[in-house]
Structures are given as structure tokens and as C-alpha cells.
Image 1 (cartoon, one colour):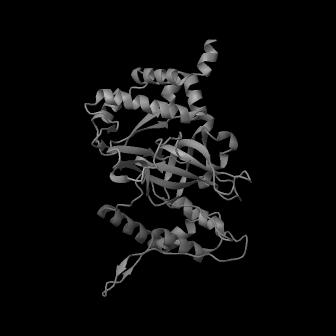
Image 2: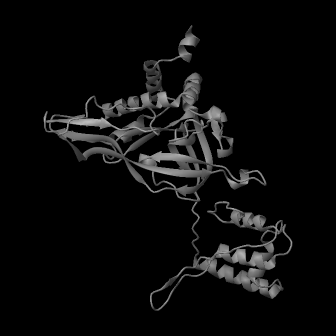
Length: 382
């Protein structure tokens, strides 16, 4: 009976378990909750919870969270808001009075840690993962523009001299929200300054080139990020994204049974945070010049010849192509002419040739050397 009760845990029980987890020694989230309570009241806040700590606290609770994340995240967010309000002198919830409505920042919940079998690449996503909490690793290939969505609109009724609110929800919401009973009052005027908005952005994450099978195109998936996660990454970044894998209904495709799938992200971190910028000191420049002169004296030729010979050493020939790719990786010097015209230092290379002449392999060798590189494909090109 106890096992059956735990497997079908009610919302109140799950909230009590989560509150006990936050207060226990497993979480150590007291300091973070205090930062949320005393933080900036103009930006959205996010509490990241480690799945490993939830698993140590209660393994069955972690399993249920992975299977039904939408229900747990919605209810647990209310628990976090309640605890932050207890620690804060000013409540974070939006308070509506007869005269004004003051919008307040929202608190969101994200998850990190070990996702077990739900830690996947875009190629590993299946229909069985729909509605589950998953973790994706890959390379960002596209970032849409940041757009603003209305979360709650505030309307002033001249008839009743009261404010009315309306909740907006779409397929990217965890749970559907219901609006007011009557919005047909012709005297309603929308108060744009009192309404609540949120940022929205769509990312495309592609599987890492080193994990893509040979001879197959890399797979990708769309990821919807909102609020404080918007603008965190750029194309070329290797990221680790946790979220809910969901099917989104598209207009006109209901009869065919085809749905667009996307990941509703709740945490987003860069997988590689090392600085890819090159900073050369005077000592580095002197060493580079010394090595170049030593190579010429030893009879190896110029530095460019040595680098092109070492580039993609497993591929025979193509000396001119290798030299061009090395120059592309190094880049040119930006020039600004007397008339103010700016010439970019970027070098573009177009490889044209017969099939099976190592064109794609040469590009893969360049991609392995470049710190920020994305493998893409087009019609008859790679």
C-alpha cells in the first residue's frame, strides 16, 4: 500500500517532499534561496536543482520527476516562490488592488546533474521521450531573434471601474491557463505598462560532429528558451540543455498525425566555457618568429609549408587546397582604406571537384581545428 501510494503521489505530497528536500542537508539550497529573496527585483530568477541530490534524497521521487516533469515543475515552482517570500521582506507575487497592479519578477525552476538514460543527442530522441525530462548535448547552429510574448494583459473597465486580467498560454506552456469569465466589455482598455511580458527565442541544437555516424547527416532539434535563458548562447557554442520534450500541433497537420517536436528548456549551460580568443604577448610573437626562422634554416621551408603538410596528414596530395585551408583558419588582416571602405579579413574557400576526392574530409579536418565550427549541409554540398 505504501508503494502504491508513493507511485501515485498527489500534488500536496510531492510539494511536501520537495519542501523537505530543500530544507534537508542533501540540497543545501538555503543560501541560494536567500540570494533569490534579496536579489534584483527587476529581472527573472532561476533556481537550479541537482537531480543527483534529489536521487539521493528519494530515488522514486526522481523517477517520477523524469516521467511527469510538467506537473512537478509547476507545483514545485510555487513551493520555491513561497519559501522565497518567507525570506523576503517584499512578496514576489503580483498583487492586484482596486487602483493598480504592480508586476513582479518571476521565479523559474531548472534541473542539472545526471539524467541517466534521458541524457541524449538529437539523434537519440524517440516518441517514447515525449513528455519526459531530458538532457541534450550538441552544438548550437541557429538562434532566432528574441521576441516578446504577452503573459498577462491588464485591462481597465470604464463600466465597473476595475482592472481585469487575462492569461495567455500556448503550446510552449507547461500547463494551460484559463482567462477571465467575461472579456466582452466594450469599454475595456488594455494597460500596456501594467501587462506582463516575457522573452522568447528558438534555438536549433545539432549533434556534435564527432558523435555523428560516418556518411550520415547530423540531426538537429528545436529548443524553445524563455525569460533569463534568452541570449545566453550563440551559434557555434557547445551546450548542455535540460527540458521537456514535447509535440507541438501545427495547423493543417492534424489529419496526417504529424507533429512538430521541440524541447522546452529549463536550464542551459555552455558545455565548453574555455576562452577561444587568442591573446598574444610580445614573448609569444618573438617565439613564433624564432620558430619560423629555425624552420627555414633547417631546410623545412616556410612555416606555411610545414603547417599545410601537417594539415590532414592522412590525406595524400592536395597541397594547394591544404595551404588554402590553413590560411582560412589563420584569417587575413582587416584593412580600412583611405576613403573609409572596410575590407574584412575573413577568407572564404569553395571546394569544387569530383566525388571521392576528400573534399568533405578536408573540411572535417578544418572543423576539428577551429574552436567554433558548425558542420552544415546543403543540396550536393557539405
